[in-house]
Every structure is written in structure tokens, then in C-alpha cells.
Image (tube, rainbow, N blue to C red; front, side):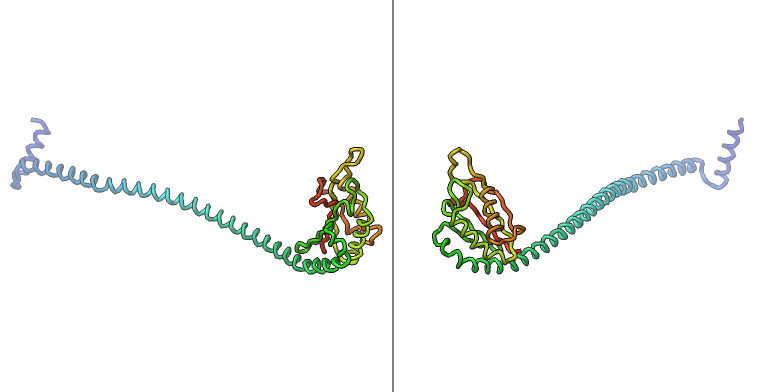
Length: 242
């Protein structure tokens, strides 16, 4: 008989001595095994869904956190853009306010200038060959061809020179800017050349300065309309108070 057999017999004898059948010991071990497997199965069945739910919630939390960070950045960028737009709007509003204030100041001066020119130019305005129109702070006077400038030329007629000096006599003492714009002739010269619109504007500007007493620094000759002017206009004077 080996040592293992003797040990087994001793164990059996011990169980018998305390009144426990050896078969009951085996049953207890089986029951313990069943309880262990059941406990492990219950733990797995209970905690595994919890683990999976926790992992899913963690993933959703990280996703929401990332979205919140992005939205926060977008909101900050939007706020900065709105601040910039608001600042630019305030600047534009300030400029517009100053411009309107300037217009409100200059408009009465243009209106007064228009009244002062009505009497001297009454004779020419009555013929319809000269037109005077005021737009807010700017006064426009157009001289038609052939009354004031020959249809195929750039030099002023006698009526044209007289009309220009009547205008110059009023504006020379006023703080104004005079823009003289020339139009092209409606018919060509005999040699086929068209007189320059700038030549017409230059002749009027020269007459205003040299013969009518207007400071040359206040006069500007332009040729913005090289084509024939409306209603036979040869020259347009735009008078703007400063």
C-alpha cells in the first residue's frame, strides 16, 4: 500500500470519526463548484453589460466633448467676427455722419450760390440753352452748342464768354471748387478732326481764370464725356462749396 492510499484512508477514517460520510464530502465539493460557476456566470451576466454601457457612455462623452470644443471655437470666431463687423459699422456710421454733416453745412451755401446766379444768368436760362440744377451741395450749369460753343469748334462764342464771366463774377468771391467738363462736338471739322472735349473744358477754365477773376487753384478741367453731350451740351460746370 502506498503513501497516497494510506493518506486517503486516514482522511476517510477522519470523516467517519466525525460522522460525515465520505460521499457527503464529494457532494460538498461538487456543490461548491456549482456555486462558483453560478457566481461567476452571474457576475459576468451582470457586470459585462455595465462595462459595455460604461465604454459606450465614455465614447459618447468624448464625442460630445469634442463637439462642444469645436462649437465653442466656432462661437468664439463668430463673436470676434461680429465685433469686427460692429467696429467697421461704427466707423462707416461715423464717416456717414461726418459726410452728412458736411452736406448739411454745404447745402445752404450751394443754395445761396444758386440764388446769386439766378439774376445774372436769367437771360440765358430763359432761352433753354443754359440749364442750372442743384443737387444737394453741388450746383451744375450746362452750356449748349452752338449758342455758347460752335457745333464744330472748341472756342467760346461771344455769348459763351459773357455767360462764363457772369458765372465767374459770382463764384470768384466764394470758397468753391469748379470742375469744368467738356463734351465732344456734334459735327466734325472740315478736315475730319473732332475738336477735343478737353480743349473745350480747357478754354472755359482759362477764361474763368484769366478774364473772370477766378483763382486757378479752384478750377479743374476734365474730359469725362468725350462723346456729344445731352441736349447739345458743350460744357458742364460743377460748382461745389468747400
